[in-house]
Image 1 (cartoon, chains in turn green, orange):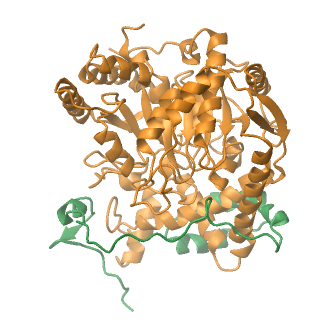
Image 2 (image 1 turned 30 degrees about the vertical axis):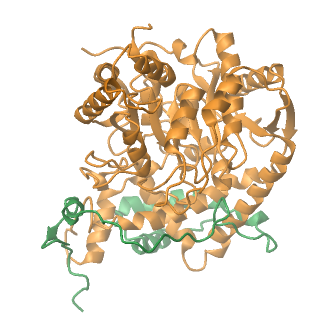
Image 3 (image 1 turned 180 degrees about the vertical axis):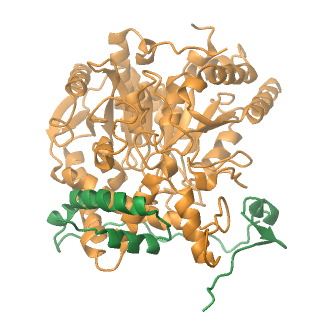
Length: 98
Length: 505
């Protein structure tokens, strides 16, 4: 029984913004299918009466005092960027042509 | 052997530094020399920061000479897993996508190491973004197990464990999302400790799964782990999941445990973490460990955690889901690699896809796509929602078990170190390595692995001790008691039985 088809992997990869080669698509479809079949058993015990836990220890929201702190120097941050200009990140055009 | 500074525990080296019998420069240089001699074969390090380490060592030596009040571990060198950011020292998380990136800031735990005067020897190899159990998923080559160079050192923190096992560093930092500190500890004959979730700040850790990740000590003794844990632990206002309480006295707990009296301590053996699927030699060493605990006065009880069999499934839904979200920041815009598509328009979206296609390795792609799938419309309730419910059930199992026992124990990993390449093409087989360590991450409880002997194949086996959340001191007490009893049987530490590595000249 196949739950994740090659087309499904291609669709999810495009959602995840990862270019995959044809060979990668073939291989991942098989692997993900096996993995998902193995882990799908969690639904056996996840009955409606069980509450979900998002976090290991109970948490409350944390606030800090509203006092400015010095940020990282701009030049230090931009030093690690693929491209920078005039103290800003330089990025490709955001929207396509159409 | 006492003349070889690299063979000392961190506590013993610290004592000799404090007594001014040796300088930090001498200790640091001895470890840099050892790295130069053996790391060609072991490949535990991705980057060796000799200049920075020696500068830090000189600084601590002059402060000691001036009579400054120093931290007990001041001057003891340390290696740091490459998933922890270090200002001015390259940090890649084992990924091509961060090749050559030099962080502009230090992780909180690195700040604490520096403030205490621990020279940082370098950055250790790991599975890419800490995704793996063998360190074979590093983009920068495999790390080899010092016990047998053809075998895996565990993962994801195989570099840190191998560095400590090969006497390249007395201390190292690891991170543990599903077992990445404890399982490498088990297969390399070293100690690995995962603190309670929130016990050590995650600020400056390149996140994989934020609700599971935890940094902790990688060492050769339980006392060393406790000393390092006390140093890096404690509240940090820059990590809002950090526990806002002081760290319990852990080194005292280890010292008390080493005295060998566990009278009144209830040790729970988890039925579901043993038996079928665990190597015979692993089971035998575990049973012998139980006998020693019993002889020390502990009461051994059997406890059942029936939902632990679902932990692996829940983990492989929650972890990839969180990872797919955390790794979205690698978009080719602000740091690291940028790759333009080979044809068609060069838009931000297409650059992001091309960059991630070229910059991520196989296992990262697998998990990000699995996580994106688990979170996508139509599957969310069945997969991610169900996994979060299993998390509740596992926490309830722990609560019931800790009502019957002060600590829980199991083998750390089902097998000893396997051959490099053996499980690389079978993701599911690789994932099973963490079957005994994952429940602690899902529940946030602390866990540690200590060496418990050699299996039939002559390779190290790990013994896992788990404690309730915020009761990390218990695992140090029981771990130190077992370590003392075992070393009494062996006539010294297990690593003394490791083969000598060939030294390059």
